[in-house]
Image 1 (cartoon, one colour):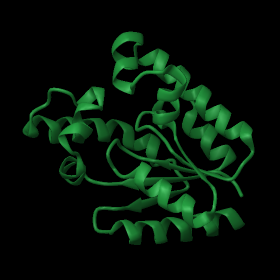
Image 2 (cartoon, rainbow, N blue to C red):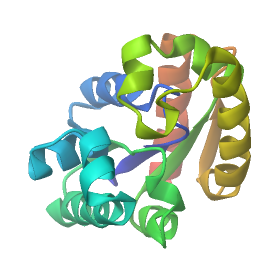
Image 3 (cartoon, rainbow, N blue to C red):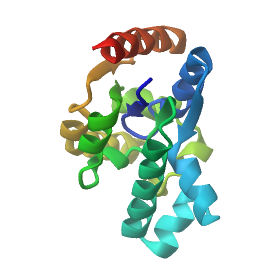
Image 4 (cartoon, rainbow, N blue to C red):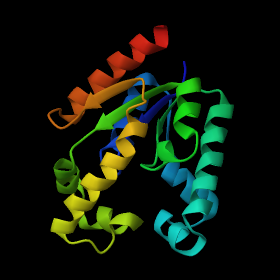
Length: 177
């Protein structure tokens, strides 16, 4: 089984859906943000603050390469910026199946708890009004990278159960190609 990479904007549900899909497939779920935190011994927000984004992205790429090198079937929840940095999207497309979980900025903003906003460095300190505007602009910049995924799943109108079923169907079809 090739790795399954879930890509999309922060807060779109990648981690939650990755765990559910991995259970269904009987494989491990890897969250790249958590793996970076474990490796660095610090929260993503602190790594950004004290070490800088470039350092974070380098460690994130090392985590990605480690996952790929393991050769195991795995479901990977990527950080929102991972597909945008250097050739990460092409790397994931070359070794596995990529699925873009697309959600609107309004839906993501409604999903994010105050804690969820605080732990994401780029969203800290934004008012509710500023949040949706920032996310809309940021998503527009990232969308061309995310859209290179093998499959796009529009999640706004899907329950998590429906999204899992759709992703599994796409993954099985692409894995057989």
